[in-house]
Length: 268
Image (cartoon, rainbow, N blue to C red; front, side, top):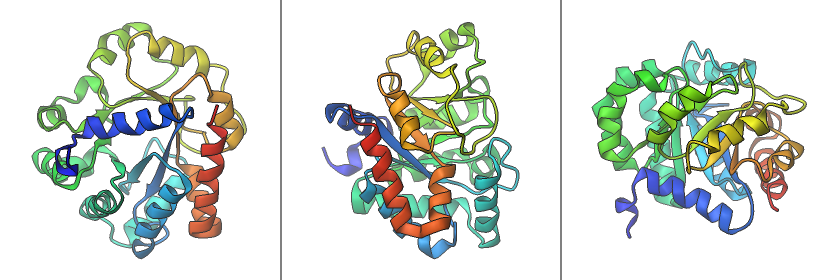
């Protein structure tokens, strides 16, 4: 199988499968493209992989990131001031995939994707080897316009589910989910937290009752102890604000060290 024939869903499955075979949780790292500036993004992406990241989420900067806390908001503002567009995010993803055979996803809000064009988005993801997209302000029930083009291209659209999601909705939507299931660890916006909610374990257990896809937990995950607390519960963790804080404080080295510590914490 050549890189050009690997579909988005297959890339995601491989990433989680490798982590599972190694007896550990998968680590997904979110980085805003263009923070702290456009020129440093490629090196930061490589540093995350060098630290042991299994998946990379490329944050598409947007002016109204309603699901994000101050850390990611400020990173996005800096990227927008630098003129970063969705085209730049796709280009960085394509470069990373060609260089490292990485599992890369785009995470951004609906407006930039619609302005880019759904058909063009699907085609560019396939051409670039980008495995999927995460759109936090797009409910699964309203995803038809994107799914019409993403599903035939086998580019995964990853849905987010919160602990408040009722079982009826999980039962209705999860059978059609693709890639992995993104479980939000709390009700609120992204950002570092001291600890995890007691709701996480029962929530993930409810999700697993409706899907066989890998389950990853995000929002508020940023410390090794968070990852250790999720061992045996989730298949992976998603780390955003803590990764951006590491970049702001110590650049590539700090990011690499953070990812390495999280990967080690996720080992059984």
